[in-house]
Length: 147
Image 1 (cartoon, rainbow, N blue to C red):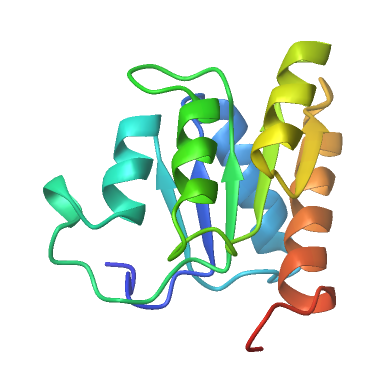
Image 2 (cartoon, rainbow, N blue to C red; image 1 turned 90 degrees about the horizontal axis):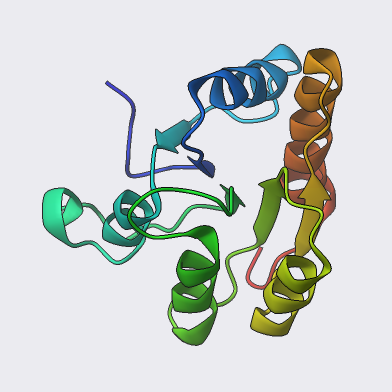
């Protein structure tokens, strides 16, 4: 069982294939030691705000959220809105990784405070590389407040 007290990356992705490729990319260069994969936006909200099945979760926050937009139950834009509107979570970096190239999605996410918007490549190896690069930047290169 993963140590949910020290999550480095929260992956919110409903596609098992995209999630596996993202996880593979993060593992290949040991970008992150502890990744939690959640399959829809409601699970992400429950995890981040310690409710539902995650009500007893410890106080630490993920260092990075990789967020798909098009998901069941609650979409990624609603998850992003909730994260960025809450003073306790607004500083968590959120990288949207989605297949949507819609200008309205790009504008909406930046309007809500997304840290980066990445269109998922079709090629499997390229998706692994995008995940690895995003994880490396946000965990190893970027300097966060209080770090």
